[in-house]
Every structure is written in structure tokens, then in C-alpha cells.
Length: 540
Image (cartoon, rainbow, N blue to C red):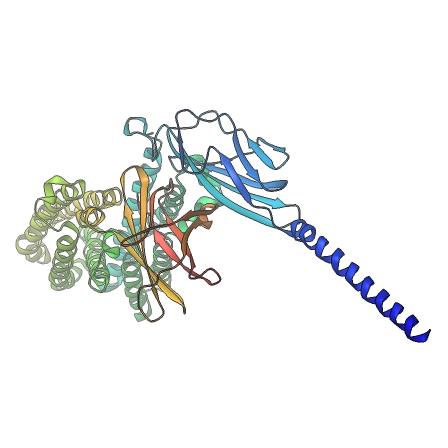
């Protein structure tokens, strides 16, 4: 009896465990389904589709119900609009887009929360009429007010640097700290400070492609600070502050060194941004910009203080004129040498002088410089010695010619500020002749990604993958994931196609020309995956 009873109990325990295990096995699929994150199954229009007419409704269809948290549409003109007319129908989101959808490629960036509370996001593209941006005849002129603000701010910034900071340098190094000559420099410093703020704000508007009303939002200013102009404005404001402190400190040695520091800081600030500073080789170009700016500041800054001393018949005028005459040939030589280097790299070929807007602006500036050099030569070799001897007619003529030099300087600043809107010929050549290449690498693999720019904003990625030993790698699958977090664009996923030369993602139309994050999900085997991350620059 006892063995039989023990056997029955043992069988009962085994049976109970078997039933419990069976229940667990049946429950696991349900549990995994309950805790699985939502995923996007399809979209209407399909991702990458070109439709003849603007869709009345856009649908995002998921594998389970979701709650939308953020939906944004980026238009072909790079403007963005939030999508708020959304209806949840089962597993789908039905979105009513704006009624004025433009011709070209649109990017819809979405972010939702699944039933388990996990947020997910992504982006997809669709085109109305054709892929790419709007046709040329429909391009808007809304950028002109922003461009006018950019040009005005840049001219004001130049006035502050060259007549303000340069003027303070001249006051303490050439004209003996004469307080009667301070007023023009103070006014110029004020103009330059305002120009720095205007430049930063309008740079932000240009960066996010918004109109004047957006200037009063913090986003525009943050965007401006995020560009290369941000450090320039910060350092130039330090230069303005140093110049103002030099004036407050008086006539001593401390004021002289503060004035010199202000000039060097301002020259450094302009070497941080702009077409010329960004050109290769930067170890030559940035110092050339620095020297060019410093030489102009020393020359231009001396004009108004000297003119005031000569007009008021100051007894210090003769000594100031002598000190300036001794020093200015060095500044002019540096100006010509540095300017020659910048022109050679930026223009490239003589034909570009008459075939590009940049070259035409350069020719105008060159003509003005010739006029400036003629005036300066007349001042130095015909009028300076006579003015130092106190001849009234020579002094009167010298004052007029210095005023003319000042006017020509202002015109040169206006032309130089226009370069902001004219890409240099070397840049145009590089955009046509060179692709953008970026290398992504981790401990397991590396990838050389070539970005080729096509018409209408289309880009293609050519991907060559190697293993950690540098030998070609033959993965099972490659997926490119592009995102633009700064613009609020969720990741766009595209599977690469295998070709004889490697892997390719073809005809990907991105409506935003900006710096994009790039991740490659490389499935090395059916069980091993590695991720390579970096950034690529998508240019207009």
C-alpha cells in the first residue's frame, strides 16, 4: 500500500508541473504580444511614393493601437508645420494635411506612444507631382527681407570692427589718446554691437528658413548661435568690450594694450566664419583672414581720428600723421598679401571673375581698392609732408581726401557683405566635381559612405563595408537610418540594395539641406548585427 500511495503522489506532482508548464507555454505568446512595442506596418501614401495630387488624408497604420504625441510635416521649401488634425481609428492614425500642399517632396515625422507606454518615432517621404523641391517658377521671394537684414547686420558689424575697434586702436597708438577724437569710435562701437545682434538673429532666421515674425522667438536666436556665426559674434562682442574698456581706462599703457587686444580679438572672430575661413587649406586661409582683417582695422580705424585732429588744427595732428605714415605701409603690404591669397583660393580661375556673382563682386571691390590706393598714395606723397608743416591748403585737401577714403571704405564693406549670398567659385566647382565621403567605424567593421547629390534634392548613398581586418565584408543586409534631431525629424529607414560595387541607397529625396545623423545597421550574419554611426552633410 505504501509504495502505491507514494507513486500516486509522485505522479500527481509530475502531472501538476506538466499542466503548469503547459499553461506557461500557452501564455508566453500572449505575454510577448502584450509587452511588444508597436511598429509601423504601412503608410498611405506609401513611403517614397510620387502621387499626382495632394492626398486629402494621410494614414499611418500600426500593428496595434497607438496615441500620437508629435506629428510634423516638412514641406519642399523646408518650412515645417505641425499636424494637429488627427483621428485615431483602431490601429491607424488618419491625418488631415494642410490644404496647400506644394509640388515636390514632403517629409512626415511622427512620434507615438504604444499601449505599453513606450514611445517610438520615425519619418517617411511622399512627393506630390514630382520628387524634389518646387519648380523654379514657383519659388517664393520671402527670403529677401531676411537677406536684407543679413546684409545690413553684416555692414553694421564691419563698421563697428573697422571704425570702432580700429578707431580705438588708432586713438591710443597714433593720435596720443586725444579725447576729442573719441566720438566717432564710440558711435561705431554702438553700431557694431547692434549689427552683431542683427546678424545673429537674421542668421537664425536663415538657418531655419523662417520669416521676420519668427525673429521674436527664442528658436531663431538659438539657431543663429548654433551656426559658425555664433562664435564670431561672441568673440567680436568681447572685442567691442575691450575697446570700450580701453577708452574708459584713459591714456596709459593699459589702454594701448587693451586696444591692441581688441583688434586681435576682432580679427580672430572673423576668421571663425565665412566662405574664406571655411576654404581649404584652413591652416593658410584662417591666418590670411586674420591678417587681412587686422590690417584693414588699423588702416580704416585711423581715418576719422586723423581727420578730426586735422580739421580742429590740433597741435598733436603733425605727430599723429607722422606715426600713421610710418606704420601704414606695413599694414598695406599685409593687406595686399593676405588678400591675394584669399582671392587666389576663392576665385580659382580668371574666367570666374566674369562668370560668377562672386567674381563680379570681387571686381567691384578691386576697382574700389584701386581708388582707395590712389587716394592713399596722394595723401602720403603729396599732402602729408606739407600738412605736417602746417600749410592750410594742404591740410584742407588732406581732410577732403581722408573723407573720400572713408566713403570708399564704407562702399567696400557693403560689397564684402554681399559675398554672404554668393558662393565662391571654388565652392561651386567642388559641389559639381566632388562627392561627399564620410567614414563610419567601430571595433567590428568600417564603412566608407559616398553621398552623391542629384537634381531636385535627390541624394544617393554608396556604401563599401570592410571588416576589422580591413578586408571587404559581405553582410547579409544593410539598412541606412538618417535623422535630423535639430530639426525635429525622426529617423528615416532605407534598406540598401546590394550591387557589384557594394551597397546602394538610391534616389533618397531629403527636403532639408542640413547635417544629418547617419547610422548603418549591418547584419553580418543571421545572428550578428553591428551599428556604425556618424554624420553626413546634405547640401542644397
